[in-house]
Image 1 (cartoon, helix red, strand yellow):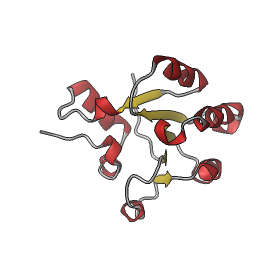
Image 2 (cartoon, rainbow, N blue to C red):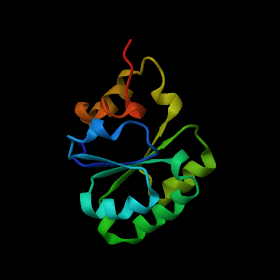
Image 3 (tube, rainbow, N blue to C red):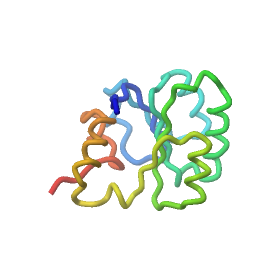
Length: 140
């Protein structure tokens, strides 16, 4: 399996860190308003979009349907961060186009196994990971 690092990432979540920490980065953009999702996708043309399900809630389904209806967005990878797994909701979101799920319990463990650590390293550049507390992997 060929793994690629995403060059442009759009993070759609509530305010989880100060904006001044990512001002120097042109490859990641944080959106905390639902009205700015599609203008930001058009402007940034990201390779990956990470949605915080707890932030979007019921709007997540509408956003995913709109993304999948437009051929302009067909090369986007969509990842979803959720606090707890739910089989019914996850299967619906997977059908609507979510490529991968991250759960809070998986990311909050003090030690991750080698496979999980390698998968995070292959997806995100280390300069990006240090600014996103949700995806920070704590080492013992």
